[in-house]
Image 1 (cartoon, rainbow, N blue to C red):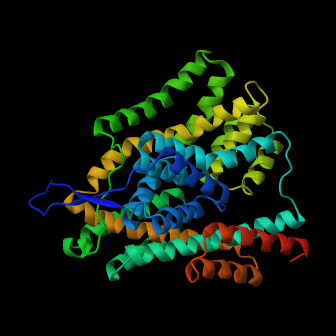
Image 2 (image 1 turned 135 degrees about the vertical axis):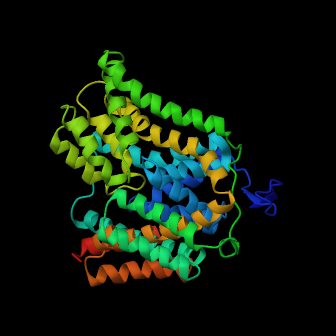
Amino acid sequence: MAVAAAHKGVSGMEDQRVERPDRGSAREIFLVFLRLGLTSFGGPIAHLGYFRTELVENRKWLSDAAYADLVALCQFLPGPASSQTGFALGLIRGGWAGALAAWIGFTTPSAIAMILFAYGAAGLDGGIGAGVIAGLKGLAVAIVAHAVLGMGRNLCQGATRLSIMLAAMVLLGLWASPIAQLLAIALGGALGLALISDGEESAGEAPPFRPAGALRQSTGIALIAAAGAILVATPLLVGLGIGGHAMALFDAFYRAGALVFGGGHVVLPLLEGSVVGAGWVSAQAFLAGYGAVQAVPGPIFTFAAYLGAANSLPPSGVWGAMIALVGIFLPGCLLVAGTLPLWDRLRRWERARAILAGVNAAVVGVLAQALYDPVFLSGILSPLDFAVASGAFLALTAYRAPVWWVVVGMIVIGGVRGAIGL
């Protein structure tokens, strides 16, 4: 990772370093995220763990602090947090081509699986299949625990940051909701500003980053404005009868992607109201697709591909899936790309570094609480589950086994358990 000096002092402070990641090709980024898309089981929290292990720990594309900043930014924005983080990582590494390559690579495997399911492909159900799903849930526990441990070591040094992390965990333990996640991160920033001194904050802190082919702030503002304009324009076009069912389909999924905070399961009520309420997909088909998306890797938002393919009005099938996918992911991608140049400037301000130190500690607390609920509570249902997940955690931490080895191992163990009734 190359580091260059930026000769722009702030308020008389010494020059700040800017972390400039070596530019990667779109092909490299696509292949990395394709592998993540094929192996990232366990939902958005687990995906963030996979990203950190592969891109921060193994490939050194960016620092833990920069990665935590991206996670915090994406938690503040509507849309799928893990997919937005992946899109931003691609943008940082390879500009617009890298961002598109990251999104396509991470999204394609799950989207194809869900389209096939819409056409009647068999899902995992009972026996070996149920065992595999149980193994993948245990894998998610190990992945998130590994991420919390690694990020905690780097971002929660000292009593102040540990206290901020604990405060975020307590808040989410008392009030489990996407709003509470945003409040915990905001509280972390406020406590960082009030309690973390400049000297404490800057010691050992990683330098800020700049995306490859960095966006101008004016471009960022234009992207944010475009996201809002599309949100307003599409229902007007639908009301005027322009674009037919294709426009109505795009509008329904764009609104879901633009208005939901927390991602993943939170989007389900919006989607159900749009597609089931309109009679495009039956309630039974909706629930069947929701069950199937839990068994595939990649973002839960690819549930949209299933719904677009299974909807009863043309365009359906592959074309319906493509419209739904673009609709649900587009607002989040526009917002994160538009906010990133403003975020990069903000995080390099003198006092913003203390705020972001608190935010980073709070992000670790958010992940730690999510490790307990829902990841641990839904993935560990017996002492044997705990033992298997502990073995996966040991393989990742003590033996530093490649993540895909652990994925394969957990699938095999889960399949064997299902076959013999354990």
